[in-house]
Length: 471
Image (cartoon, rainbow, N blue to C red; front, side, top):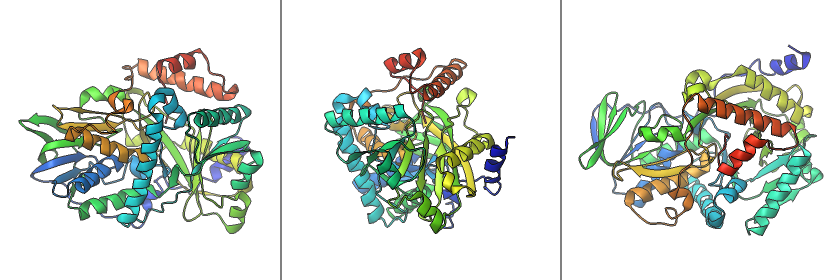
């Protein structure tokens, strides 16, 4: 191991292999598992953000509606408790992706996304959820000249479409005045469209809000099988069954109970580090007084933010697809990625040399080929689903919950009229084609980063087909 790598490795010597957020002392105790048969109006499967928002909004729409939620482990234990805590207004995996796919709907999509983020902020206040919600915005930073050009092009495209409100281009000096890194060449600051929060506390707060509204929640209750049973659907669990007039699937990255949906989503493993709290001198060295979220503009990108107790979360870059698309706890940790991330952190912030990492963790993201969620119904309209958020689900899952409830109600709404809601992405091919195709795409993206953003024939073809791979 080279001397520099040894230095980076030493920064990881005390890092606990657990998600920082899930170690919070305020974590609630697990609720009992289902051990009998239940009947309900609405069954929600999955205790992450998708399921929690669906159950809560269902009760807000109709307080008399009987709602049951089942979760295979504990509420918030998977992606909802392991993410970076960026809560974005975007419903389309960023403005650029949305403009490329649904230009005619983008004004409406951006407006709905902004209202959705406002509604999340209002729910946090209404239910007294102490999740460290901060409406700080996010800066996309350029670390290479071609990325700076791309940010300027994106701003001009947004401005031409009338969608640049709240966005501000920053030159090198301006971005370094916000957060100081010698690697930053400029940035694009979305001042209002992103909030920072403690992701696990949001999940736990939504859990309590659901309970307060009368939702019955069963944890450590895995849904094993979904079938129609007359006018109802039936879901079998290890120790019981739930019969429901309707069901909403919020299982996301885990194999869908509707088998025909499985080819549309693949798991991508993402990893993150958390530092120890910065001292006053270290905080002065990086600035970051306005506490924005940050992300660099490479294809293999990093996301980073500062926590309420002045730690830095640093994640991203590697996006690992397991052959066969199998989700496994064995992949929740990847020391070689942690070492790579540590080295990249100190390249970004050399003034923080000597800082140590206290936590290192990973988890699976539900990725689809268009990078944003898709929706639909099955079992004669009795079951709705929303999945494929591809890494921006902290905010968009609330919108997805509204879509599922609209679909179950058979209502024609501004949401159900969107092309994004009415269409589906291309499915991923079977193995070994998926493995090979994703591998070529990852290699091509890395090459594009190294060659000034120049996309090879493979990527240009994927672009024309509207296909891609991201996390």
